[in-house]
Image (cartoon, rainbow, N blue to C red; front, side, top):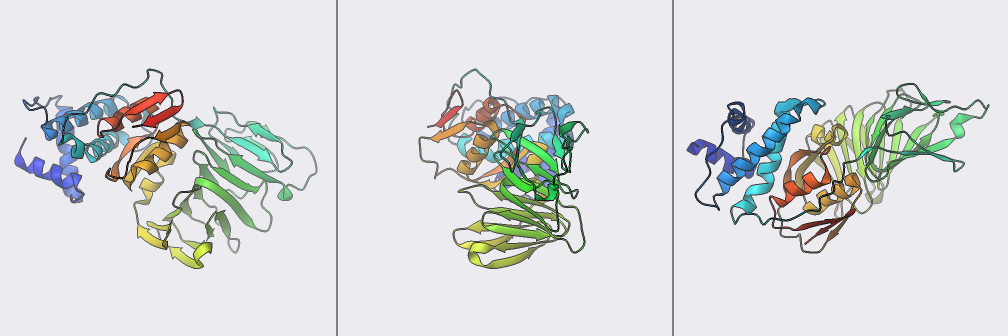
Length: 369
């Protein structure tokens, strides 16, 4: 392996790569995959680069085998994504010593899926079919394929009927509101809205959702989410507002006005900007908006995230309780990507390759020591 590639790997791990250098490094690994070559084993167990390369190639081979299941980004993207995840999480630990073997229980915990409950203002509720991807709201409520969810033959004024769509941990669902606005709801989230909009278009969100708002002149669409209120006419944006976590609003397309009620601050976001709430106030940062919304394509993207935040995502998506029985403060922030349609066991195995952490899985309880 030439010296230039080793230098690029160092730059890659430290986030100093240009786009051209990043492509060259990823192409280098894909070249090995295409030629079905193997990297020679090292005589020294603590040779971090050789171990890292072997892990990368193993994961890329696994990604290639599953490439037919990719929804939109293609097998090359899947391989590169695993490369980013593997490199980004590994070398700091591999430079120290080989990873200890940590046994996980044999039973598999599957990832989340289409699960949600629809509740009406009179208290009645119904579990939505897991085989369906979403529902469409109007006087009658139907699944996206046109089959009935709820048919109402009464003369009730539906503009006054409030409903809520709620996903459990391990659940996600999609709803098309009566004005044509499309909403993707992430795990452990709740959206409250009128069955049929009247003079105002306003919804309440707890958790995370991606919105594609149908444009209506002089009729703004409003999202109320804990510390923030977002107002738009027609646009695409993502809102993340889980209890006891940092609130974030990210704009993909159009323009949104975000009010931070607690700090009496109002800001207008441009595409690619994210408004973040912290204990010190609110600030706007530039982000890759496609990464922020990758969750709706079953991809988890980490951008300098704390391990504890990632564990929160694991808990919600796999419907497990995570117990931390050690100090995680010294661990570095994580940058990388991984499909979220893999089992929890596969996810934990990927993490334990790169950290001096023991994962113990018992039932739906994960203990970290």
